[in-house]
View 1 (tube, rainbow, N blue to C red):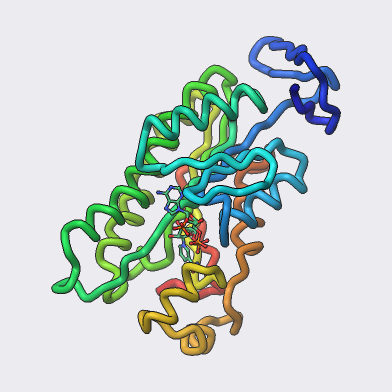
View 2 (cartoon, protein in one colour; view 1 turned 135 degrees about the horizontal axis):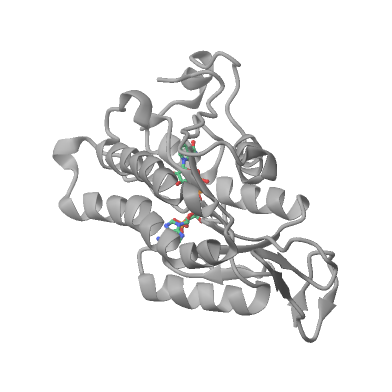
Length: 261
Ligand code: NAP
């Protein structure tokens, strides 16, 4: 069964490729998005927003889910990522939008940080982005159109105590974003990063419970005087993915209530 962009499900897909524009039976441009970390927090809000905007959306997350087009994979495992992408392509067609939101923190004083902790943070937050981009780029190159948004972190602006591995990984993601934007701009693919400020998600609340950040203090230090919502990040992603944002690439778009430190 195939889901068309107009919401109709048909037994056999009749996708037409005219030049480099892919049209489905309804004559609409088919856009399939993959959101990693789509089972929670920011990733879940991005997936909901893109669905509401009319895209076909699949999520990849460590945790199983009953939601439609939710695939279970560890982004650090290239075989699992490839298997998820094979299933997604079979269900929804080629993937031309990728939002990398899967991530984790292991905030600790540097002298308490074990190399295993360091490696896991780099593996999920940086290498996971590598594996997912590698897995979807061929579809985007074939389509002559693509959008990649990497969720990095506002902690990269000035660094943060106890977050060394996390800031190192997320800073590398910003660097990767800028390089890929230059490399794949000529192929019609934009690559941008959204570094969120303090966003009310399970990850943030767990860090707060462990005493590594204080939400109330952060609200006081934030010019717009509130904590961010996952939907704030989803709105920025939706814009960067839109046709209107085609002239924006290689950018690091802070969504942080004006708090750039
Ligand atoms: P979240 O609620 O914990 O969501 C992250 C999701 O990614 C979880 O479902 C998590 O599963 C999943 N995940 C973790 N490792 C994975 C892996 N190896 N493979 C596949 N999925 C994996 O966190 P969030 O706050 O929404 O964070 C989303 C992104 O925003 C992260 O990259 C984070 O670093 C970034 N960010 C968040 C904030 C904030 O204030 N919340 C600020 C700056 C940046 P588990 O729950 O099982 O780990």
